[in-house]
Length: 296
Image 1: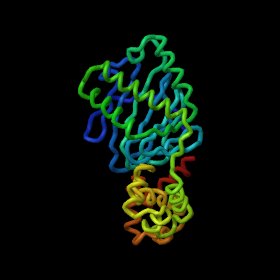
Image 2: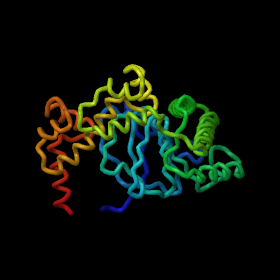
Image 3: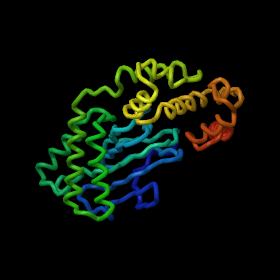
């Protein structure tokens, strides 16, 4: 495997993805500020790190999986993934699937040059960020999303730099406060539904059944599941089925049989769903794994 690289992003602007670098931002200590609305699966991030730099990824919709030191973290709507300075992280071999995210990088190498703060205050902020003990921080999306959206809107329009810095500092404080709390990511009823999905992933999973587990109507269940987990129940189910199907495909089980085992109506529909979440058809996925083995 290639060694992890010290990753630097370049400026980019399209309909769904905007990356602003320090040249465009001109904000002390902020190396990057970006957003991406992912409508179809894209290829995974390779292992990389950011020298002397925190990276914070705020997921406003959907989910994304990160990996550090062989541990997987699934980040959903309202949650922040914290990549610590010089820490190697990636999305492993998992393509990045449907989500909306903002992320920014904070260079902590010079406390005299951080968000227009005086040196003492900047050092305190850096210490507070370093005191975060876990990779996922669960926040109240109703508080954090408007703040990060406004900060990016101002940055994109070359707005007042002091105001942008102010919004980012507010975002930091909300995140630091949330990190100190022992928050549960799932309510008891939604956790029960998620557990049921995990245990019955090969079956036909009815939303009526899942809603019944939660003592909710189907419409109430769909709304609550999306709000807490970050994706719709069907999206979550399909993602879990695709994950399970990868294991079956690598056991030389025919695609048609895998589709049947996982209760897809047809093998063609299974292939469509599989490609949506992996960028590859089932056959292409098998071939890619065979090629990986041959290289090794």
